[in-house]
Image (tube, rainbow, N blue to C red; front, top):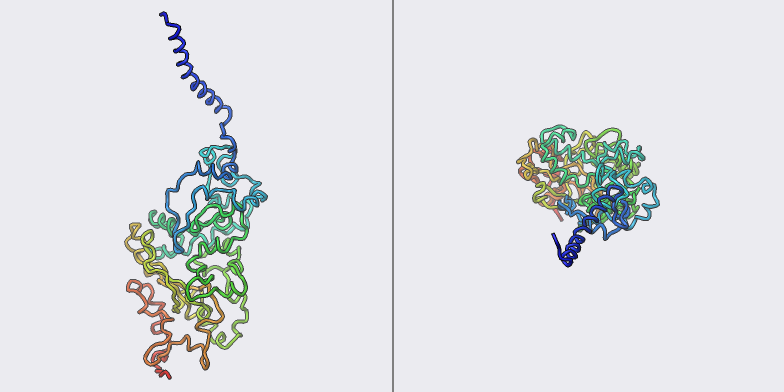
Length: 461
């Protein structure tokens, strides 16, 4: 077939237009089989995670809301901010032995690639200390040896949920319905974590993500780590946050951080698993430092075995209660209170007749939002727990005395002109809500205090 030369030239141009992409695709495909195509400048984990603009381009948006809990909603950090290594602390990390062992030693996955999907493939793990025995334990055997027993794994909370659900211990927690376990992990376990939550990243309740450019912090920062989790109770009290309170004397007088009393050994776990923190053998006691407290004054001599030190030396402390897990949260909002009750832990704190107690979040319908209308055995535990607030002062409203007064004037109930003065310091049955009664009445002070406190009539001057 004869063709016009002009038509032939046009056809050649059209063929070339289609041929060039084909050659390029073929060439790229061939090259892919020989060596990976890497975006210029991004050829390793470090290259990607120290380039902020690049992380902004390739990040994956969050699919879940930030963590929340007793301390409120977690601050929000964007996904690329949480994994950016180039900030404060990165230079220290580069000079450390942790840097020398390489990213994939702990995180798995594939190094020396600029492709995010490939880098995060295979055995990649975002939080290596979830598998701490393999990762952290390879070098830090002593610190991780008993971590499975650490109370920071949440065994106290798990035990409480298991008991109220009709079981016997935290070991039975796994027998709960899976959707309840999922609810616990999403709502209650935001502070209970692994090695990395204290030493590398922020705890979830603090927003998550790298805390200091991936540098490993041997001694966790009290405010950014400890108080981030222990906000509403420990930190709130110790720092004197609430109106009418002041910081703990151990902070203002001695500049103690949490680790001054709570050792790393205690945090890392004990040889035997304990069901709650007051059962721990390594926990600190006031008498570790105050060895001669019994001889200090007549009041110590009289009451050293009657009640815990905080009954006299604590300020008012945070309480809250009746929580709808993943619902409206604490339906009794946080409030300051001070309640003395019958010792709820006589087996762990023998000798104390009375102790301070704190209202908990427990309620029969805690898990209603997860399809469990009511606990099977809600009365297995009181709704007030033994407590030792971290807001100690030498002189409190109970230890200070006016002219001609003794400290009993600030503690003992007195019938003054028909009004029971100091009654509000004690937990009575009439302080309980109806649904708390069965669970908690056994630790109220009704019928446990000297009758003369109520009947002896004092006329004010």
